[in-house]
Length: 388
Image (cartoon, rainbow, N blue to C red; front, side):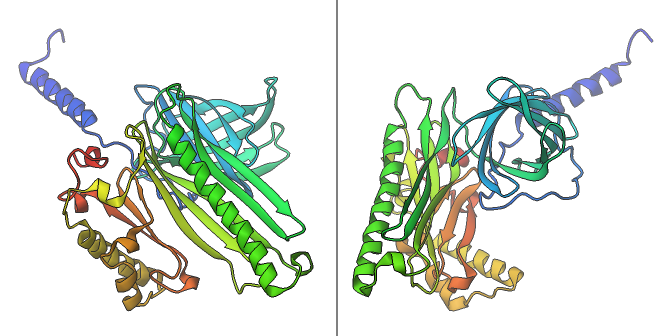
């Protein structure tokens, strides 16, 4: 047939316009809960890998190979082709990788040493979640297949332009005299020629150095008070610090530090969180109030959502956090909301151990959607981009 009927032409045009509009309105990928561990499972109905992106995409992942934690991977996807590198945070040496991912999410990535010799192979799935975030799961093996172990990586919300990226800086120290060990990792942002992230880097370094100094002082003081030399007292003290990126781009860097420690002789270890939410253009640390209109009643709104969510989580998990503890620990006061990070989907709140439940319940987390806070958010503030 040499010509289509007019009705068919009209319908074809309408369908094309609908598809174009739908593509333009697709939401941006959402950040995964940084503490969730991606797990292999049954495939969902939508394609795992999806169609090849129309433009080159850069994604950052964090996770583990076997028992080796603290692996960070950067992948650049162009069509079905993947290139990039990965490293272990406590080592720092980058390992080059390249591979492919097809429309069904079948993933194959080879790794190479500095001479270009293959040293390993990642085989698994590129799993796109309902929120748009990506998990990589499967098995890593040596080139000849004699050694094999599972890997699991989840996408981090890192969206820098150019060559800017976050690298983990390790600090390790042991002291036999005072019987303690320190293992710390903290973020530093590199690759920005204009130095825009220098103040954030200073803040992150200062935080961990302060915690290390406080820990060392406490160890010596406790040993002095006990009157017993630390090196003869069995299990020693330790300090560990890690971090999770809530969001990192050219304008905002939101990071939560997980701080855990044990002092010899104590009944149990202790842990808590601390955050740095950094306004890059203005070079300053953000306070919670900086996100909202002057005089806005954001605390009651956050509190109401958090209390309801915590009670629902407690019931679902059969943990039954005490209701009065939840009401008190998540009540509408500034001190209850010290640990928050900015994510693509909402404000991520952490309630440390003891705050809304007993020690054994551990920390509790709530994600408050921006839709809940939209009436209070400052129109020209850091969160405005998420509610437009």
